[in-house]
Length: 72
Image 1 (cartoon, rainbow, N blue to C red):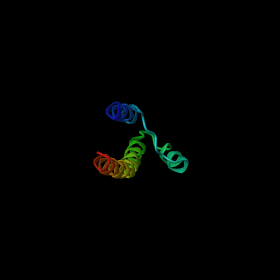
Image 2 (cartoon, rainbow, N blue to C red):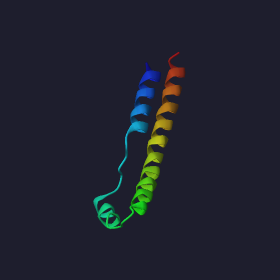
Image 3 (tube, helix red, strand yellow):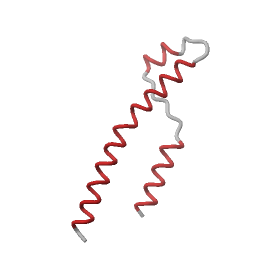
C-alpha cells in the first residue's frame, strides 16, 4: 500500500508543469522578447524548492523505519 502511494505521489510531482515565479519576477522577466531568462529563473526556483521536500521526506522515512523496527 505504501509503495503504491509513493509511486502515485511521485507521478503527480514529476508530471506537473511547475511555474514557481512570483508576480514581481514574472512581470520583470516577461518584458524580454525571447523568454530564455524567465525559463532559467523558473528552473532555478523549482530546483531550490525541491530540497526541503527531499529533506522532510528523508526524515519521515527514517522515522517510519525506526517505528516499524520498534513494533516488530
